[in-house]
Length: 185
Length: 212
Image 1 (cartoon, each protein chain N blue to C red):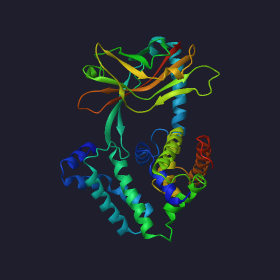
Image 2: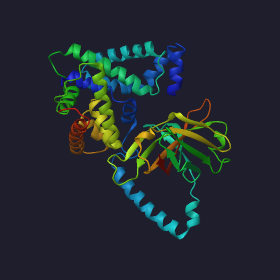
Image 3: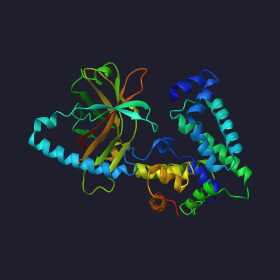
Image 4: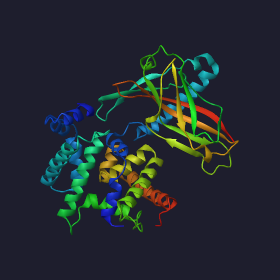
């Protein structure tokens, strides 16, 4: 079913909307949550919360990109749950991806406010716009979706080594880009 | 920076990139092992076309645009675009622009208005899509003066007499008088009521200068 039709169902307050959303994007959402959380029951719970979140926000929201919209909600809920569940322990996949980026943002400690975080996000988006499509997909799959290098390599039909090297180079580029944007690293 | 903060910054990545990363697969444009093979095929095709065009100029002029399906990762058709429209749509800008002006008038004309998709857009509108304004001078430190991607809803003109004029807002004070600039347009969007905008891809370049 078309995204626009699913959104229409949400606007009509039809419960079929959630079923259609789940049928179309359930697998992707499950993967996003699964990359952050370990246990299937936590993933399931996050998906249910996310569908409820979508139900509560559409309307009034009318997202242009439904997939990205629902995945963002899933990711936010999963991360919140992850922090609640594992204050001391660390989940390998999600945490490894974040650890890789720590060096890029090493001394950028001015992200206390939402505005500053938004500015830094804009800089990252600006950086992504400078990349070719394949590099951008690698970056977003690794650091937004928290996919493993193996999964990215399989998806893009590249060797794991090639993906790792490209990600390393992109992180270096990101560091330089942020320096040029005025962030002291 | 703490990982929670990094996660928050990364969490704000633009939705278009999130969507792109989900749908992009090896073999799609610019991605995967097929990229290299495709580049070779394109290079060979380009050589062929150049030779062919040099030998037969009339044939070179006859290349026509065509519709292309937008495919989702699983092969489902989710829409259509119109490709290679540069021979079918003429784009012209006023040759010069005064510094006090803040907009560039862009004249878009369909050369064959009876042909689809232009015939379908006769009562619709046309909007600018991906574009760049480039400083052509050698001494420029920043060559790209302005750029945008995707549907520019605010830069839209109603179609009348097989064409439309759109106003591209530019901060002309930031442009130097006497210098030459080039507006490069990579796509337009045909807009028809109650239908998804049709992306019309092409490659247009229009030069202009700024006067005092």
